[in-house]
Image (cartoon, rainbow, N blue to C red; front, side, top):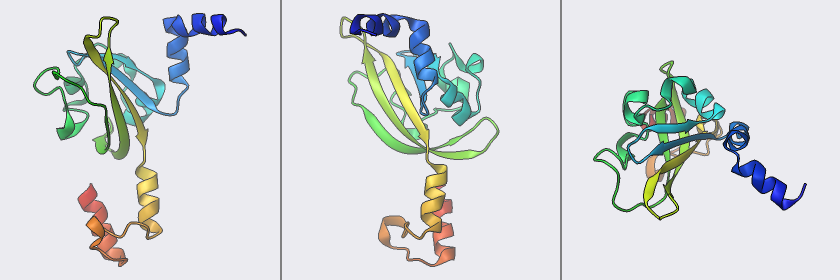
Length: 160
């Protein structure tokens, strides 16, 4: 396959969606008015929400609260300036289960340079966090809690 054929495949929206649906990371894209425009298969698995339930909806109403918690850059409308964000976050899946995720949010601009929305990549790290606690690799909050099992469990509850 030559480069021109690959460019045609990537330019086609259906093909691009098929590619994004095969990623292990959840991909959520919303416009400057917080309406969800894309939600891949991994995002469905991570959040428990089917894409049909969230597409076209305001991200705050779709998930019952700001998905990104108190770090939402859109609570007061679209931001004037954008800086890419990368942070851990606890979310509640549709079934009520708490999941620890890593989220990277990147601002998107149209061809004229106008801010058009964001794309967020999410990855579940719940199991990794629990494994680190079990292995004693987490030594507490700011390094002040030692290796005692009860103290590590308390630390996990605080992280929440």
